[in-house]
Length: 124
Image (tube, rainbow, N blue to C red; front, side, top):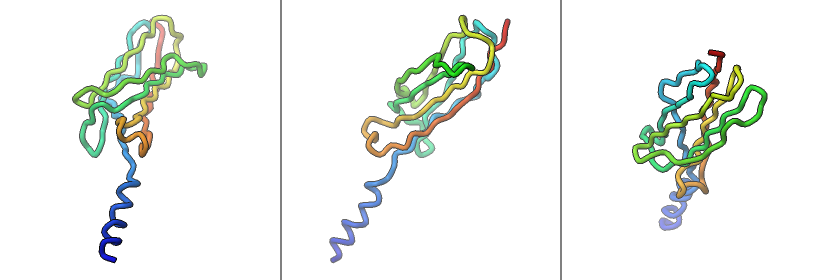
């Protein structure tokens, strides 16, 4: 009976969810058309930076069309940089969404967390 209780106590932790979240560092939200948008951040996992976490970066134009949809992992220090060009874009509000897809080894138990930011482009 004691062995059964010991085995059962480990079951809840096997259902634990991996939760990592992208955190933007001092994001700028106002840009002039032609100026590149560069966003910096890090991946928070248990209050520590996490390396090799797959992130998806999606930018939606004011009309709802997709400007960018790219994925790549955080670097060895758990940081990321995302850059997109605004040379051919129209003025308006663009929605940037960064979603954490977790470490490869945790994909089976991953909770996808996102951070969104509205970028405003204005004429020069």
